[in-house]
Amino acid sequence: MAAEGMDKEWISQAGPACHGGVMNPQAAPRESAHDRTNRMLIRSLGALRGSQFLLWLAVLPLRALPDRHTGIIVGGYTVAALFAVVMFTVGLRRRTLSPRWIAADVALAVAYAVVVSRSYPPAEAASITNWVIPPLCGVTVTAAIYGGRHRAVAVGVVVAAWLAGAWPALGTPNGQELVSNATMMTVFAGVAGFAGRLLLQGARATDSATDRAVKAEHQAARAEERTEQALEFHDSVQLTLDMIATGRHSAQKNQWLAQREADFLRVLTTSRKDGAPAELATSLARMIRDHPAQELLGRGVEPRIGVLPSGLPPEVVEALTKGAREALNNVVKYAQTDEVCVTAATTADGGVRVAVIDQGIGFDTEAQPPGLGTTHSIKRIAALGGEAVIVSAPGEGTTVEMTWNS
Image (cartoon, rainbow, N blue to C red; front, side, top):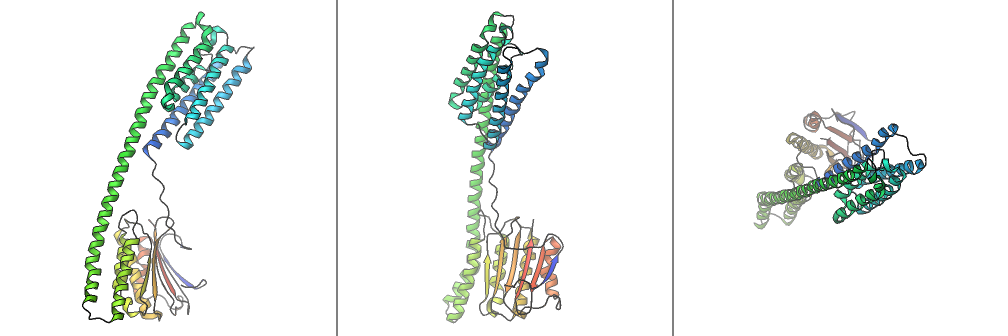
């Protein structure tokens, strides 16, 4: 490989210079419909709870707080609001509300439903002045969706705590609000629980259907791959085996033919991703197999082709393949070496990098500009928004590197 400090010729029309090794980036896992639905529900419930707490701040200026129990009322409000912020923040990160969080939410609601409601005068305990009424409704709705098999019990406990806490209001002019609020909490919880269950069931059904579709697609891709490999074997490898079987060639020639086809098959079977054919890998493998360098160089062409992205534009595949072919032509003509390596790999940002590396005599890229073949073949990728780099120095070999990013 060309040593550091060699002369470099940069051939580029777009994109930054390439340095360092290549990577095969890991695809981000697909977010399930169930996770998206959970996140939507938790955001909605969090917004609902927040508006329920803010409602009391709007009502507060209308009536003064009881002087005797102001600390309990305001303190309970603060604790309940902060707990709701923490619970929904954790729920968004985890994309669900666990039974423990629901149990804690219900337990806290029971506490302030009784303690705070009893801190108000009986005539105000069941009125909108009591800040616990809207949040209690939010607690029952949340428990109905995420309470699991205990959702009904959780809703019942919260409603019972409300009745117990505001019971003294029953004999006042606002007494009817005691029952209406309890009814509201129960009805809202029932509707929310039914709707939430439908949404989550639909999301799970969508995920199941998506998984089946992906599995079927992978199976079809694998079947297509097997068919393509069979055709490749028939069109090339089988012919080579037939040639060997005739006994017309020397043992050395037969060994060379077998090694050439082994390298070809190795590229075809290792350069595929998720069962999809890598068009560039196939194109490079065919070019390397059929290039005169295989016979003209003592040790032939060593292919090092990793997993490559599929679906590259045909003109990019053609440009990279022709550029690599021209680089091999130059190795045969000028490098005075008996071996050359062709590498191809995926870049960190999902593009592709192809390099032709030899340990030949090298040349001064400034004193000896590239010829016509290099200009028209290796530089072709630059016209497509890619980049080509020629690194060489006398006695240090030559590296031709072509990069294209989508």
